[in-house]
Length: 554
Image (cartoon, rainbow, N blue to C red; front, side, top):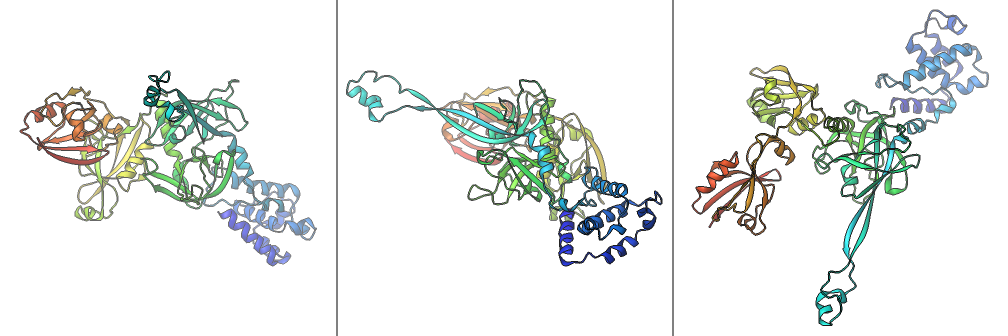
């Protein structure tokens, strides 16, 4: 952004005639040792900030210099070239501090800025994805295909099923190559339900892709292609998406509406934007770069050509871009890829903390004598889980994870999803009164699937759960069912179609946590509680993360 301000100011100065020969000499005179240096002396050496000022001054007066008006204020060609190269290096190196970097045009031609170098560096790693889904449909031709009419008119084959035809549904999207071996990141909704998936590279090579892992919860998927020549594919490096700031320039690359690879530009409009309607990990980078249908799965890149996000969704009433687009942050994408790699590319392993808590608010903070009203109060700890072994206690307030601030339970869940199983994390907590900060080390591991769930079929005819197959809940199963704050209970695995439980309205996936006032932690608890019923039943259960209750009499 500073570069754009600089160019705008420069053009305004040129138009207004503010850059004059005398003014330039006054500015140059302020630089210590300039006279000797202009005459070719090697010492004293100029300071870096002086070199940047010189580069800016020379560019501002490029037209006058070219016409010979300022020949006396210009150094030998070699020294001038060295200063200009220094200015360019200071601007373009990724290691340079973005807060102090200035994009200094090297000539009057450079005032016409272009994103072409960034596009050239990144576009080869963005692919188009086409999916094909075959849908069976009956090939009917009106009433004469109805078995009743065919039998009534004694038509042959009246007892045969109507012929089946396959209808083809096509969809399109984009993807990003993140590894030279042909691993591609895209959105789950781009390839969901596809029977055949094809990838078209930027050089127009087309190849079939196979799905390694697709996760609806995070709306991410990993594909793999294998080029026939076996050569490494161009790929994008990922940036630290926590380093981006509102106002940073970005490019969105994808395949909108199937027209072919397209690049749009914009800025970062917001960071850590929450939207659970897009995915269950509701933190996104918001951008005003135009994102349209077909851009999903494409790349959002910074000015160094690094991936900072995967374009995922737009906010629109018309279906087209309204300047509000959302991208999954690169840190989340990197962790997703690495956690799949931990399983050998077979499945996604999510890091698990073994902690439960609630978001801190102003009332809770005041009651606990805290100066801040953000964080997560730990309410339960899984025995011998990662949090327990790290030394976390009930009542601790988690305020940071790996140095990143935690404001509420949603942010804690998101930050945990950015981490990789097998590594360690530094978790910062407030403890005691007055509260003191402690930093603890927590191992990151997969949620355990113990004790192993043993299915139990409810056979008692007078039971409201008659016909249901029950299994005990485990941390792994709870994570799969999106019940992060529930480690015990009994889940309905399946139901007989005409069973009592089905007629009452229970569904597979419901988690029973209470029967007639008794807490249900295991299948044994459930069987015992169902035997004690006398026709009056009160059952508490979770469905889609919400606690419900039902009272029955029969």
